[in-house]
Length: 204
Image (cartoon, rainbow, N blue to C red; front, side, top):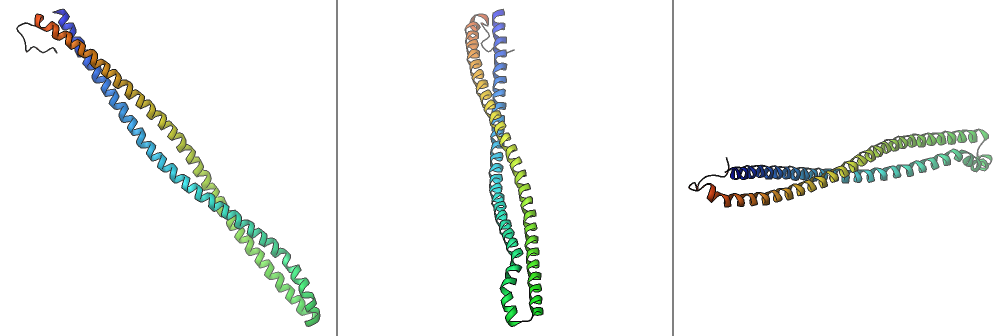
């Protein structure tokens, strides 16, 4: 009788272990699925950030080209009055008085100064835009680095959860086989120990 009770108790304990192993397996599988969903979100955000990063880099390059063009124009405008003055001197000597020549030169200088000022204004504007884009780029790169780190961590967590789920599943299967052997032993012992009680349950 003691042996039968021991077997019944062993069967119950084994069933509890099997249930616990399957429960842990389910939790591990659920966590692996959560990690997979988070990975999908991170990858989508990474893709969007890569697209924005490429767009901003293109804008910065275009602004750099425009700034160089403006600087070139600024240098050209700065040297233009002397050139125009030299070209105008022969005509001034031949066609106009010295006073008219001076007035024309003054207008040329004013126009050139205005052009240079306008170029400088545009250049300052583009410089400000470039700095703003570069700040956005830096923030995007920082966020991208964070997402790459998060992605690596999620992948590691997912792999661990999948390994745990597989281990718990194998453990549960092994426990079920052990439990089946105990049940078979209990069934063999039952006819002699529980004769006359065919409906007696092995569980207390």
